[in-house]
Length: 355
Ligand SMILES: [Zn+2]
Image 1 (cartoon, rainbow, N blue to C red):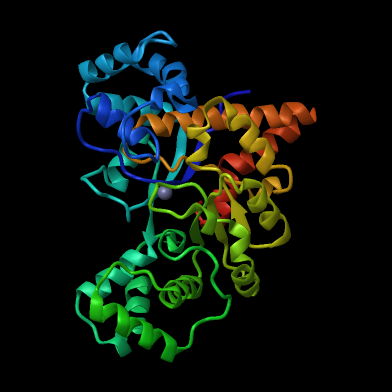
Image 2 (image 1 turned 180 degrees about the vertical axis):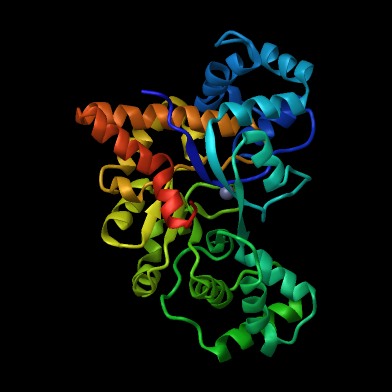
């Protein structure tokens, strides 16, 4: 079968610079620092699957790989990996850019596929706060800004700030005003359970899919507070709206996420970020998520950030893992093609209402 093109429904920009070894390693995993990365699954996977894209034999050494990368320059390297990923569309989260990165349009042009923006709810709130706003006007200012935004979805990073154990009910106007007052008086980083819940419901009211960071992430996250089962009450409350809830990453709680995708009509899951980090073990990751998750509720994302390699690497590993699942089921070619089409891009096009 030809390689299916993938709709990468959650990804980020890549950096605009050449990288030395420490810089490359720091962007390769969520550790954010160099050291030992190449002696782990993701390091093996880079040398195996990315080296050929740079005209090197698989299993080149780290030194050969990085030297070739420098020789080609970051622009050519980025072009090769984004083209090589074989994407049919991108959903780009523009809310994480600790340094200048490629914009959605630039990523889309390199990948040869349309790129759509996913807006971070917390960023919207922080922009409203920075613009100066009384506590009583905070909620409506956030809603107005969301209503005028051009985005296919919104994203909550409550997991990073307060964890996922959030009550299902909408906070009252009085609760939001009080919480906004506390936030606006300190202007610390937004981390208030009431405000995160308010933002999530503002996203639900917008009627576009709401993405949630779940599970694996950088060391800023308290992973034990990022089990998607903690969202159960909120998912029950959102379900009647019919608004799609997109649980991102999920590892190591991908089986829990698969359960939620099975039992809630509007819950969808992916295994972005973990796919490339687990390297060859991503086959088990995809298979375990699909133990319970219906194929119509499972999407592809890379969650690539910083390194263009991650766009390519995730796509390669994901296609292989998915093909293994179908092979194990001994499905007909026609059924395999139909379900591959759903996971690769059909589910994303339906959920994000893209043609
Ligand atoms: Zn992300």
